[in-house]
Image (cartoon, rainbow, N blue to C red):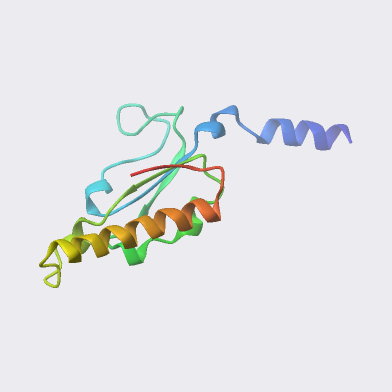
Length: 114
């Protein structure tokens, strides 16, 4: 029993309470997680980036286990040739909101930023 308690206590970092996933297009490609403060967010912001150039490429389940989720995409959806009217833009926005709702359903405790 003592081995189990030591193992669990040693494997859970207090830094995980701020774990963040970034779901984004090419504009987020340069954002890095790691311990090197000069080349990444540093050790106090742990997480992972997921590439999603279009709203349809967002997998809501990648946010499972993270405390924060930053969603930065939809620019490519808006640049599509089929987007011509304000109604088309509203349709893209509604798809974006639906993905945000799916992320929150997959992880009810996540804070989603967009």
